Length: 220
Image 1 (cartoon, rainbow, N blue to C red):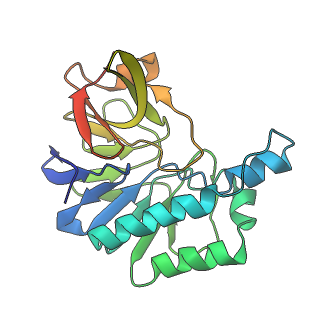
Image 2: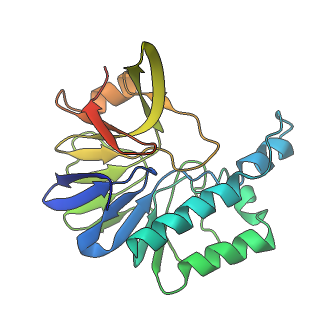
Image 3: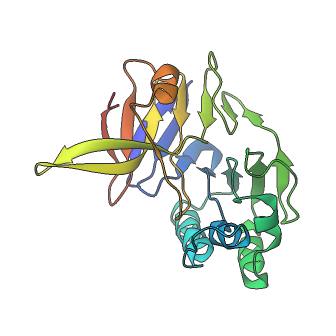
C-alpha cells in the first residue's frame, strides 16, 4: 500500500496520500475534519454560497480508502459535520451512503468543536477513544503521548520549481500525529503557526498529501 509508514508509541501506522491514517494491525482507518454539510451551513447562515457537492466528494474518497484498505474499524476524529444542524440536513441519499459505509464495520464518531453532540447516523459517539497504545481525540493536549488528533487542519509549504506550494499535511513526531483535514471544503493552518510549532517537537516531520505521501522536515 502506498503511503508513509511510521511508528507511534509502538503502533505501526501509514499516512495515506488521501489524508487518511491506516493502522494495519487493527484494520483501522482514521479520518479527521470531514466537515460534511459545509455548503448547507454557509447557505443557512447567509454566507457566500459554495457548490453543494462537498459531502458526496468527501464520501466518495472515504469509500475509496475503505475499499483499498479493507478497514473494519473507522474513526472519524471530530468535526465530521460543519455543525449538528448540517448533520440533520444531509439528504436521504447521503445518509444512506453513510449507512452503507458503516455496514459490517465498527464506526466511531469522536466529538469535535463543530459537532459537540450525538449524531443520529449510526455508529458510536465518544468524547475520545483510548485504544492502546494510542489515544484518539479531536484536539491535541500538551504532554500527551501516543496521541492522534485533528482540529488544526495543518498545511505545509514547500518550494517546487521556484514557486511555493501549500498542501494539507500530517504532522508527526515521537509523541503524536496531527491529522490533515479530510473534507473537501476545508482551509488550513500553516505548520509554522505558533499553535502547531508549540505542540510539535523540533524533529517533527510533515507528510504532504496529494498523489503521493511525501515526508519533509516540518516547515517552521
